[in-house]
Image 1 (cartoon, rainbow, N blue to C red):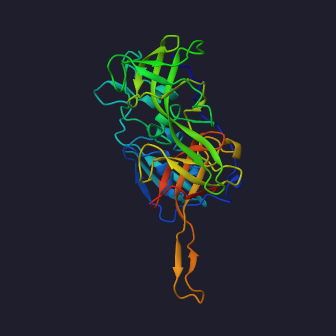
Image 2 (cartoon, rainbow, N blue to C red):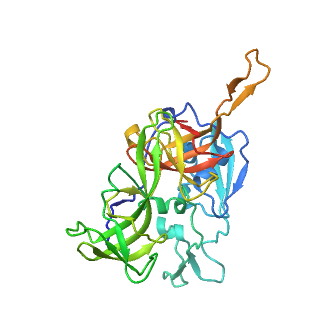
Image 3 (tube, rainbow, N blue to C red):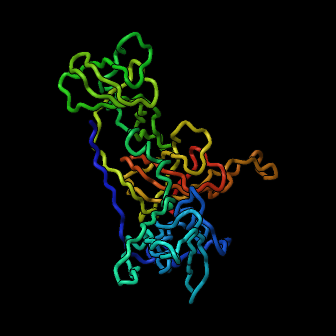
Length: 371
């Protein structure tokens, strides 16, 4: 069985706006109110009111009515105003019930249960009456859509030049199968002294190259399946417990590594100036848009951490200036802001990042940089 270190934490923080910007930058086209819908994230809602949604902690902190923005639900309405020169949010809750109903039972709401009761229902004899505990069945909004990145948190890997080629490989499939899936068995060369009972099947994927220098930054190991070691040997026998796609002869097998990843992200710009490129897109899509996962050519070696946000700039095209005195002179058009991404899994030289906002089409080789 694979064991991975999971670091699920909430970052409690105190910082000045001056560390990132002179002041909160309000979205000039902000609405006066916004009603939360299913699928919204805290990042989306903040973007309704802010130019830079990563400034959301400051905006929400000004507003004592919204004590915990993570406990806002679909149907709630958020109102924007300026009070004493500072932006202010207030909200009304959809479907809120009173603490008690006349001629009916006492109802204890979920927030009262968590935060403590201040009023108690008593009988005519002065005895404490039982209350019904009410639970909100709606799911509170999330900071980011976790389901968009879940499959990329541990499964794919970026490996070195010989790491995958030197790993054991599938030599044959048990039975008469041409391809194998969950419930089948594999024969794998040379697992005689196992370091683990759990192995992952990978297939060589893209070579990640820095488009500016031509330097190889790493090699993609595409996730194929999970297996358990049944019998050591040459070949060894492995049982397939989970498969993302069909397994073929020649696929490589590697032990599962302990890897730390975060369950909660605090989007913010990196402290260092970062300039890089989108070099690949994951998930088999050709058009890059909101909530797609991309690979950029900067990683932990460059100072990137989970939660760091970068602006995406669409690379300006080359245009022939037919009016120039220089015949056939080519002029490069300016790079244009096209969206925002958030790094969620940095490797040493590259990182996986989630596109949080897309204002126009995004392509491989578009630029990324610190906001």
